[in-house]
Amino acid sequence: MKRMSNNPLWLEAALDERRQQSLLRQVITLDGPQTPNASFHHRQYKAFCSNDYLGLANHPALIRALSDSAQQYGVGGGSSHLVCGHLAPHQELEEALAQWLGYERVMLFSTGYMANLGVISALAAKDRPVVQDKLNHASLLDGAALAQAPLRRYLHGDVASAGKLLSKLTPGLLVTDGIFSMDGDLAPLAELSQLAADHKWLFMVDDAHGLGCIGDNGRGSLELEGLNAESLPILVGTFGKAFGTSGAFVATNHAIADYLTQFARPYIYTTAMSPAIAGATLSALKLIQSAEGQERREKLARHIHYFRHRISQLPVKLMLSNTAIQPIVIGDSSAAIKVSDALKSLGIWCTAIRPPTVPIGSARLRITLSASHTEEDLVFLCDSLECVLTSL
Image (cartoon, rainbow, N blue to C red; front, side, top):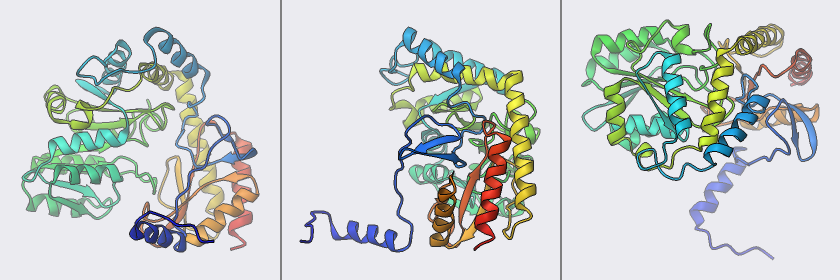
């Protein structure tokens, strides 16, 4: 007997279309903590798709800090930062981040998505356009939509393309990812910064995938490109990647921070992040700044070098990435799923990334490497990829 549904026909049709195109997303539940030795449905895999680049998500120091902060300050923030939800761990974390990065102010947000929505929707407007890289994260694009601002997108990583747009528009906000989440490449930040200065545009970078794991001191893309608070006035970072916790921040100057406090709706109308998480994140920052953090970055760099050397010998094209994000483009979505499933059968968990997350025809394995992987893990990954990819 056919099941009756009260759902609208357009909803069912949209889901059916996703299924037919091999694009339906599904949630997978892990049976244990976030580590390279992941357990799904009570089977063990080596996971190569997490953003836990430094391997801090299950670090004992963070677990202790979370517990200690919860014991002293509780679990819930209770209200927004502007009512009574800004506790001592929040303030301490903001001040530590500002000092580390060399900015006047840092503001905490509950997620990176909300940070980008908050900043762009507050600073952009119908008469203040937004110019963005073609491959920017969805949250950056959505921020412009929320602001109802004119949005123009330049060719990926193309400074000349960006310059043509800036020269034709009223000054507004120039926005790019630092490291692009699906390609793993670095934006030409120094050139874009100079371009923004020349045209008197505000320059904003979301460095979610760079902070903590690149740069001599882990300060991310701005350190790698020789930028500072003056040449990069708005820096967004997240804690759910290299920091191993959750939440996000905006680093900027006093005037912009004061403006965002008045007009960034996702900041004003959201309960503050858990003070326990803030305490754990401060512990993560101290680790990133320590000798252990440097060792983890160096280990990650060795993994990246080994992986690229091994995979360059296979019949696939590596993307121009020297970061922890190492995509292998398959093309067809169903083929990408087959490759992912073949790797799972060998004990490797790496989810296929498909449109609309990536452009049509560029479905891929988004392989991510972590300092918590061992050398044996990397050998196993590359051996497994060689087995699967040479049989395509």
